[in-house]
Length: 288
Image (tube, rainbow, N blue to C red; front, side, top):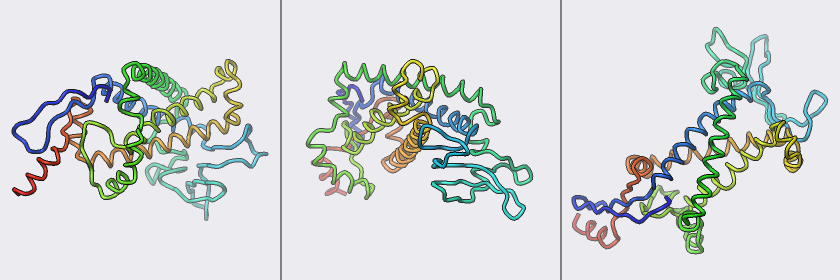
């Protein structure tokens, strides 16, 4: 990703040449981010379970009607149920959200034990894990940003050009048809997606996380005010997490569709097999 200059020609295969697409620094930060986000997600759900409701505004409580999401348990026809309530609309989610576990031992908790770290209800441990990986993610992102500015990686590989934007409709159509072009450079959709994560979603997660911290409230009180209060910051934090999960799901689907072996080799070893030149591809087609 940072330096994309080396090429190794594979003489035995008409599939195209191997290009050095991902540097060691890019591969290292990628896996640190992946590990950090995994633990942040599961420990974050543990923290959410301590108060499974989200609000818009500066305050929350029984006297306020500003909740946007509530996950809990209740009784219906003398039977316990789990429910999820979104903007006042309640849905039964027994077995997944609100009430989960073996049928003979259902437990009232927003997210099930298999989706949290630790699996039991342990807010203190969840917070320790969450804060450790939050600072690891923040430090790695800051180091990556500084290095990418220094070596020109941002300008060279991630910033969309006017030509990229002109190709955007075609890229969208190609992806919709699962038609992928394998090259050294990122396509327009990749640049926009990676840029959104690196410069919008991850910074927003960090900022909203800081806004919820009492110590940060004392140091930079205006941050919480800018976000509309701690409860609103918590809701934005949760919504950003959902967007990151959605990005991960789409990212995995694209890897599977584009060729998982080639994609995994790129992020593990740095080497990526590009498409053959058009003239070579046409020759192969005619001879087939």
